Length: 257
Image (cartoon, rainbow, N blue to C red; front, side, top):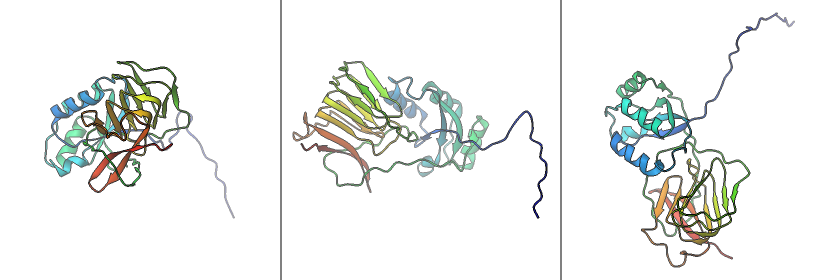
């Protein structure tokens, strides 16, 4: 026999589970001067890129190189805030590092799970991959690309936040196109193209005439200082990320007709 009991709900509040969206900064070095320089180099000309994103500081990568390093969170937190990151939580540090983080006002989040995006594991062709980039949690890319139908001139920048970017005209030298998803340029690509800006490793860059100043996917980049092969330069091509045992690298392939 079942029995139903009367209940009373509070009139002023409810308690429910919630999930907070975070980007993750994987700290690989205790050298905050170098961190500041690399953040400025990568995001200095994109002051609104993070727009107050809640941030988890992941100290796990630091354990392989400097497990006992003292971290100056009084310097680190304002540095991140200057780039509009909002540090809230920390994980993965030594006992001393976690104590320093908690004393600075961060919350321990040992159970936080990093989202991962798998890049295709096909055979590679020509490319190199200097490892660089502050880590950011991959953002799902919803349907509906941002479409730009005018030429982009030097100094202009377009960012397709949370989606793909389609450019129907030339991206001139000195211009920059950025997307959290794929980048399609149905014209010559002469400027900078940054796809998978928040860590989407299977993002790709397509162009009808590939001759960029810089290309980057999920933080792995290549500049024009390393010339493209003649079979690729100024021709229809795509760029993708290949995950291999020696690390990720960019793969540049011609587009067949």
